[in-house]
Length: 460
Image (cartoon, rainbow, N blue to C red; front, side):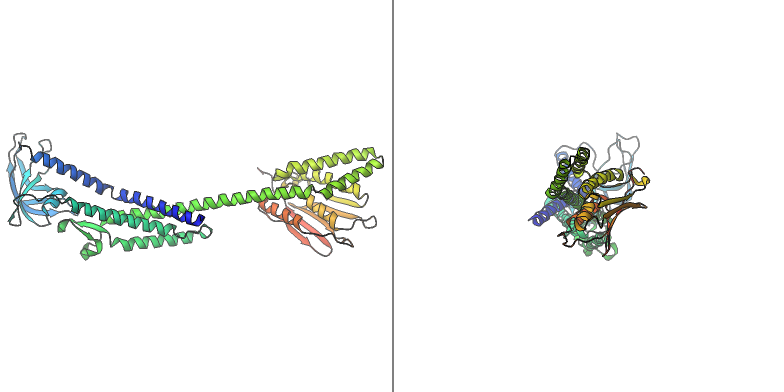
């Protein structure tokens, strides 16, 4: 369902972008249509009023530009005296607008005799404009035909439909079957190459107006081979390609951001679950009741001083566990202070049978590590080894370069304790989650060693 919803949203977005790009690349074309409509209305209004300005005839050959407008070039220069101008007006060419070309179905090279509109007196250097065609290629034109607006609208429809289809195709190439898990620069470049190739192939089917053939709507491949390049069409297609390529990159970046958010959320949930499991494992009923039994033993022996010290250590231990259950890192000095308090609780239970050999270089006391690292290591060592007066048990805690090493010689019990390995698994997961590094565990027949890489404090 989520995949279907995602495909629908992508299709809707691609369609909206295609519509916007289609309007953008044809914006000038739309403006020309609006201007021509206004010009047509203005000409109609003017023609219905009595003309006060002089109209003269001129004869020449029509030369059309690729943009649709043109000039009638006369072999003879006509002189026109106008009261508003200080000097006579010399006329050898007449401007022909796009609308007039369409209106009279004019073609490049037509021999035309026509009346003209002289330029305004303020525009001394402007060309006169075509007013009415009288003779075209020897044929008299009794009256101008009606402007072919439906044909113009048809051309506009083809233009809009083509660029909408092209843009939608390119956007689909850049976003279809998008897999953020496999999104790489190489795959993105392959999509770009496919989009460019598709645009190149579609270029030859692009509609354009051949003004030299009377404004016919044609496709590029229907044009003469020597003029297969239409720079206006190339520019429009290039805009569509660039937008599609940029959108493809943005699309990938959005997916990568979404993937990172989901990954962060997953890590956050794992962190919370790990912290919960950690607290549940640290403050277990077994550990709690053993601590109470040890305290009860001190009270029965009337050893008030040791009982008070034991309560202080027990209080500090539980407070450290609870307070650091939601922290991520602590300094080695704080972790070792906890180790001392936590170890004292076991020393009371295993009087003169359990020893901690601690050798910590003072330069690493400010270095950091995940909080509550020592608790599962000490707890597992005590749980899985025999501790007797004849064979006292030693736990070594030392620094080697920038690594904290915890080890012990193995002394298996006659009846091994059941083990699930959850403690070490949680410890490894926490280190990878918090530090991005792994711990090294070496378990041989005679020795158990854990190497924990310390991290420099921030700012050093």
